[in-house]
Image 1 (cartoon, helix red, strand yellow):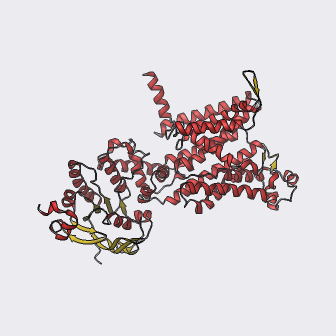
Image 2 (tube, chains in turn red, blue; image 1 turned 120 degrees about the vertical axis):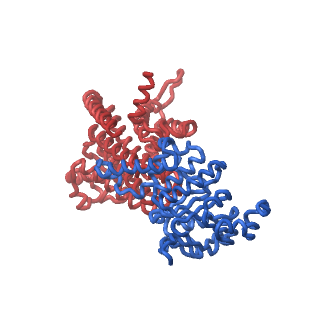
Length: 344
Length: 260
């Protein structure tokens, strides 16, 4: 079975590479930015889907893990001179000044520190069920934000970081998206993935089958936190500026929206919705501009696109609760199936 | 203690607040036996199961597995130690396929972890292949091999029960508890079940304890019976003796069996 998927996978990566090359040649800055956001949103959606869609852990802490990844990565890639200029409230800690790493290592470190926090907060929090877990993880994300606001020697407080080196280009972002997709797909298609789904579907039966439920929840939560941290790190380098206000609950909400729209428990759904929603969010900027309708000119309302989006989410929940893909996956086999059906 | 006793319950008592669900349940299960636990609804049979399998921590008393006390251990530890169970209301992993359900049961005997599958280590690939083969064999034993790729929730009721047993067998238990395996089965299916229970006992070297209301099954397959009523053992013995035990007749088998 593996032999049959390895060729299409290599081809797909080749096609992706070609598309990225073309995008680099022909896309303007704005379009490139959207393409970059797509990759990062895919990473974030995959990681939340692992936690929520596949393991059933209702976590609202994504923005917190992203913030950790973003700050760690930024501190590591900024030069000492930059940090010297930035920390005007209070001088940075010496180790913050000294810390430096190449971009790949910095992103990895951002993910690793986020994963460490995932592990540490997971140990007490994952004993909670359902909604309680949601509230507690939301609280964690808020704590991260408040701490970032109040530790000027580490995070430069409310001013945040500016002029973070913009290493996160199309190649880096899509490479990380492919890594995230690969790791999460391999995890979920292994027997460990079956066990995670078992924990989601029937915790009692899973226990009776010898599953140490808590350990597997912690595994999923930690791996998910890692990629949330990676996403945050890439986002920091892409936007070149971060501050605590960026990591509000709305950031988690955006990711959650992609996951739910794509389908809880469908990785291909997360990828497709990651592309679709990122593009739609940009298109919908039109509704925030002043428009002329039948001779009336309506003033532009900032934030209007979020209203439209929330409505879209309500409609999804009402009429297609399982999202775009439900729990189905788009595999090479199903794609081949569609084509052979068309021929027949 | 004779070492052919695989599991022993000593004065197990379970209290939920003011309610005494089970009191002083003592029973010993010799290796290779098929034992029935019967009694009217609400007698405390499933509570006994839950205490033995670690879902409830007994208020007092002991569970000895091969002579070692195991009461109060979490269910997954007991499963590792060799105790597997099925549920009265079937609890399958509904979004997974039949084969995946059995694979999940098998995972606790798995030696490679998912990190090895990331880099395709030969060891993990070999084990994945072996596990798949072994699980398909188990499905063959319960007659579900040709449904391996179906979603487990799409199976008919009787097949779901058998899948639950296959999943329990995948954990390589030495002691298997079946909670009403014949519930919802037609007479032919329960007939097959009796043969099936004996077959798996032989094939897997199991000791089996089952809760059942279908007296035909109980009398047909069990070698020893324990009868519970209001949380207390009111009788125990071979099926023939239980059938004519006056206390059992009044408590459980009821009037229609009194003149049979």
